[in-house]
Image 1 (tube, helix red, strand yellow):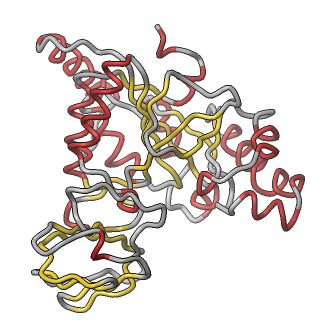
Image 2 (spheres, one colour; image 1 turned 90 degrees about the vertical axis):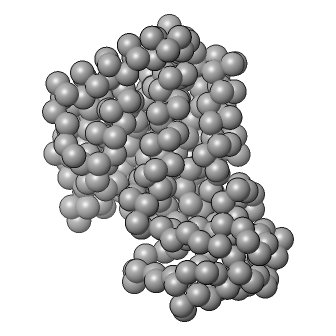
Length: 322
């Protein structure tokens, strides 16, 4: 469903009044960020956030503009109609430290960073922030990019903070399937940020219909294989992650990658599933860089009654302290 700018504003105002009517005290903030770039940010995600008075920051790779997975018109609409901030995720999503080791810092700046920011700004986008691909950087890279933008992200297991770090970094915690966290736990994070009057900073890539995911029960488990109670069909060309037990947060630094699924047999690469799940547990399989819509809705509706929504640059400007 698409919302006009006027409809989005009405929904945002209604949400604020409802929160106040319920006696909710909005303290602290939530900073939502999405990486890479899909047209569905504009058509699906932004209206979903607008429904609760929310907005986000989108970090785009210019190669996805070139292949029209997202367009400059999409990005301008996100900025001008939905109040999003647009930032750079570099041109091609290369690992920056590895690129610099192979080709040098000046080449990375000339090929990956400067053209990304320049193209976006020339299109009328107020680009003030960068996210390094894979959240991987070095002090040298950070110092170089902060001559042109004002912040970058550093991945963190629980990103609740009062504001930016001294080096210009903002922490961020993933909500993707690869770093799955039960929504009940994320609600606890919202409550923690509210109590502390601090910021909860979360990032993902896509919010997808629940139909893009498969859930069921574990029947039998071995180190690299699950037998489950439903047939699992994977879409070709998609990268999938397994959540062995949806009541647990994915704690490993290495996500559980699905290598194959045949009927009710799921096989994974590496790790030991016997330490992550048990017979009878609920499992989930979904696109590695996706979040289920039902869980995202539950999260943002809960957050809207307790926290204010900010973009990355809002935080850099200190607006969360107003």
